[in-house]
Image (cartoon, rainbow, N blue to C red):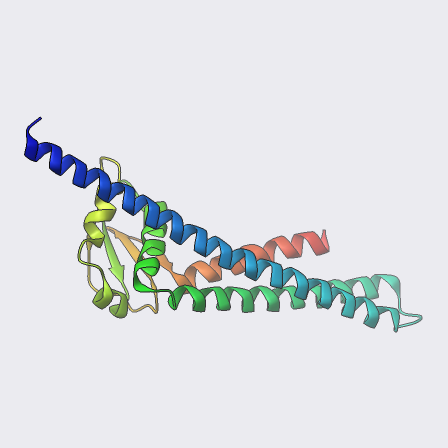
Length: 195
């Protein structure tokens, strides 16, 4: 290995180490945000449950099944409101992150959603304008053989991205991801409360 090759190898290794460190920090920061939001949501859920329990106790003589159904519906609505506000707050926090951390989160989400073949990455107009110059290259360098993305036209989304593979669009706009998570949690809550 020549001296130049050694230098290039060292630079590449340092770059990979730094990218890995940045990704880990961004993921840790995102997890801290999620953990804090979850703790707040759990506290709000407990308060809502206590409030519902108090309201149910005041309804003397009500039919037990009707009370139980009403209680479950109120708890469900309260939990859904808390989930919605928690997800909205998490999106606000992510959108307000510094550019470097924001794009590290985007990169992680892209790497989780790429498919084999060549995909086209469509970002929001705002994200396209703020896109770091080496962003696409850093993603492609992290992908396995047979996976590749290129930058496409801006998408009509607020934040996040859309991956296009021919006729298949993978909508990973933050609003779509939050909506999917909200529906998943709604289904889980419905099952827990009514089954």
